[in-house]
Amino acid sequence: MSVVALFTDFTRRGPYVGQMHMAIARVAPHLRVVDLLHDVPAGDTEAGAILLDAVAGSDRLPVGTVVVAVVDPGVGTDRRALALEVSGRWYVGPDNGLLALVAVPEAAYWFEVVWRPDRLSATFHGRDIFAPVGARLAQGDRRVLRALSGAECPPAATPVDRHRVVYLDGFGNAWTGLRACDLNANCSLAVGRNEPIPFARTFADRAPGLPFWFENSSGLVEIAVNRGSAGARFGISVGSAVRVIGCGGRDA
Image 1 (cartoon, helix red, strand yellow):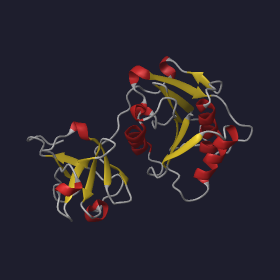
Image 2 (cartoon, rainbow, N blue to C red):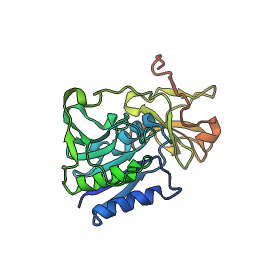
Image 3 (cartoon, rainbow, N blue to C red):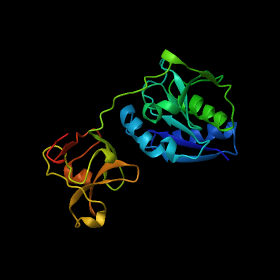
């Protein structure tokens, strides 16, 4: 059975996530729907792109999965609705850079969503376009799409600012946009005028109350305080700049 995964900035407050579920159920009530993440920083398409790649890159998904990704501050404008196939996995979302980082160049095929419902809200395309199209793709129906080629496709490489906090989780840990594979254990981090933050592999490697950075389970650099909140300790918020220092004598 195919899976539809929802990735949005809607939060759990209000009816929006439930309405997405119902839109899918109207098309395909048998589909399994997974709520992947619903507290992407509001309207932050760059943070959304980094998080989508980290938690739902094609190598993390079963073949046939459809990810409906909605961080859409331009909803209701003339921005396109897109679908992207990467190695048998599908992504559906707005043409605003949100899907850029999951588009593995050698395996990415872009499509424009041409289907529209009879009644279309100007402010909720997640419910009215992306969710129903995701459900149709999960059933193998591509009639809702038009293949794109050449200049019609989004840019192959979209630069993003990874030197910032992109997410604060419920523990107060700060996810940065930095990829852990680009750093080493000699690197420290600096956030604002706070003390340098060293590397540790696990929470147990640091005494309670001490800060550190580590490679999180999604491959990103995450800042934490053992048995504490990095957000509260350092006054961190989404968008806070993160500087890499002391990597073998070279700062980044």
